[in-house]
Length: 252
Image (cartoon, rainbow, N blue to C red):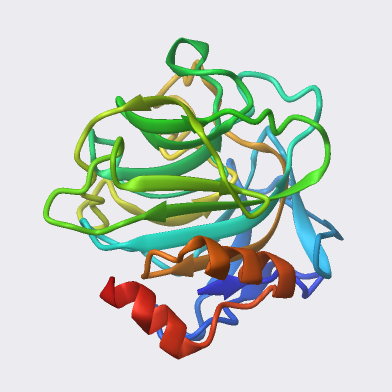
């Protein structure tokens, strides 16, 4: 899956990827509650991108996400404001169910008791990995989160973070099995810019925030654990490696 956001206008962006999900899968610009203005079109790292106000903007993709223990890579460009607050980090990209081990959420860490603020984070519900580099500098950064599949993949042992093509050291990890749940009443399609745990007004008071503030561009979702060379190539050329090399990654 690949949403480039290069339309630069309108209310949706088309999937430009291949072989995963529907080739017609749109990423639809939304707000909650409905009726407000949605994410804004801006200049991105490649072509156009989207800016999120941290108040009510988000995107919903017509894609349910990668389930269970299957390997995956999620890569994207993100720009986080210098003054990003603790209620503006959840979540950059997510899907699944808000239960321990059943959620897949990438964020700018907003929870100081779990790790340094403003760092790249994967995970919720006591299963997480948090990086060391502060993203709050109002500059574009390329991020990739990789999960290696297996019998019982664990947040502490099967997740790698990459920032600007380099392996990102982990400041904090919390062990726990990952088995992403994409079916059932509580599961939802992939969101950009909205906390996976925030289901609607009046349902929860999210102390760590409901919506992400910042900019996002060039979102890729791949059902393989890409290696560092492939991630660097993606960052440089803005396209996935040839199918045969992705197949090799899937076979590892």
